[in-house]
Image (cartoon, rainbow, N blue to C red):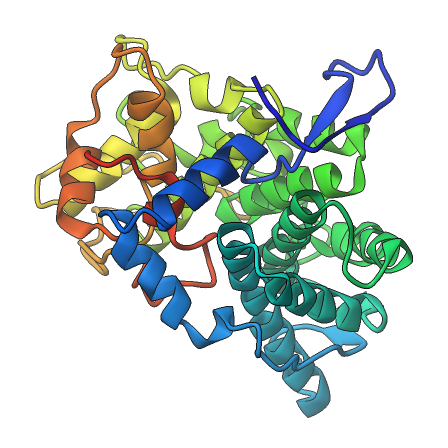
Length: 394
């Protein structure tokens, strides 16, 4: 049962529950209480992870806001826009880290810093350059999760309700229309692949933040679609990123970093949906003949290979991005790099589970690499997963 500070009533009859749980994007109130208790306990595996968070300068309430600019977009060729984009990336990350510090320490200085960052951008950002969904989806979801945590944990927005409403409007009017990757050339159907899946996960988060029930349902439905084609929405869901018999990651032939993005983003998306009462992304079955959840199958495939074992590789199955891309062998590029993934799914299937499943390769990975907080790939994920999702033992 959830004990969130707020449950916003939504229109009924749309195939979803009548309320959104707040806070309820990546964390609920119950999760936050557990995170705070673990972080302040002085016990491992949380103590070293919490210390790493505190020592990160961008988690400081003294962080100086770099934004906000009017337009963001990577590699724009315009020095001003490039500088604004760098500021956006840095500020969104700092907002997310300060929100974690706030819900643990309950020091209002961190909440004020989050609000200062969000207010700077909501008062200025009006556009995103075409085909720049990564700053929007990756960094936008950091900012949205940060604001959600502060507003609903604190019970108010530090700079006033009108500025919180302005932030919600910026998300709806600027981020949502620019969260999806654009096909190249634009006459092709919307692209599939991991960036598209990310955009739909971010879309769920944006919808929760702005209380948009139809938007949430649309994004969830896309993530559940079968892979009947390799372009458009059919190439954007869980079944397009994880091979449903072996768990092969779509990008496994490209490199292990992009494979980590796939399963890491999917476990975050599954947790977001589950926090609203929809465990369908966690529970979606594979076709391995054993009833294994597809996400679990994909993670075990990834971790089996990245802990040193051989895995099968299907050369006829690959990622969807303007059509199928095929590889002739699995890639060992970035193999065994300690990307901060696996904790969320292990928590759901094993820690919170009924004992039905085992995840031996995920367990091996976590035992070897905890705390999963030191990856250089901090932009891609909602970091510090050992602090926020780990049980005391694997």
